[in-house]
Length: 330
Ligand code: PBG
Image (tube, rainbow, N blue to C red):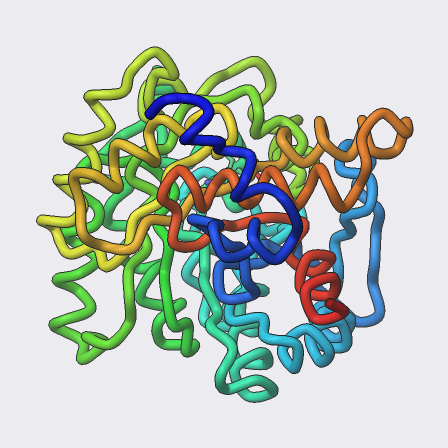
């Protein structure tokens, strides 16, 4: 490859040739919209640490989804904002068949049968201490006891009609137990999206404000179960275990600072790979956008295209609604 015979700029000359030469594209098919849901009707609250994102009651969410589903949105991921009165040490509200998530799944599936509804399997919205698992008197998170609760939670989501359950708790062995419970209860068509490589990240801060678990968690961390941001090879083990236990798709989280993990996972595994552009990534981008330091559409589209380049099949992003609208305008 010697200049002047090779001039890489020839393939960048205009938009048409750049389009032909593009290795990756972002479409509506790549996006999953995470949403914060509230109990009741006609409720909407701005989230201070995520400017532009609101918690919504399910009736308002349905109004928003009408247009988005028509424009090609395939999936939503539900995150409940649970009233303090329903939080407890054993998190039993998590598997209440009439709980907020379970009711929301039923309404969304009856309104939009084709829209995939993904539910989060983890106890943090329901525990009085804000951890994803059940704790003992010393504050240790009990792996196997927690799994029993997670199985009941996942089962209740599947019973409500969830298409995909997404365990984000990082307990060891939970995917196998959930898969077995589904097989035994004739829920073999419910898919599992495993948050396999979920790191103990500071970038979840705004999410914890959004669902109201930050205050409960206080100064405690999730470092005894979520992965150490220092580790990459360990992610391969985590993903491998979840696939062997029966995961259909896997997730890497956070996204932008962890693109190396996505790329490695793509090389090793053949299941669809999802990544989560988490609340802190949203907050960073949106703060810069709101200050006029970054161009809104440009920054958002580039950030998501880079997930595709790294090897992602689907991306959870709080920008999914905006992006779907932009894509359908062009
Ligand atoms: C909890 C959960 C978290 C997120 C998704 N599910 C937070 C945590 O682990 O504390 C974070 C998502 C985000 O930051 O956008 N199981």
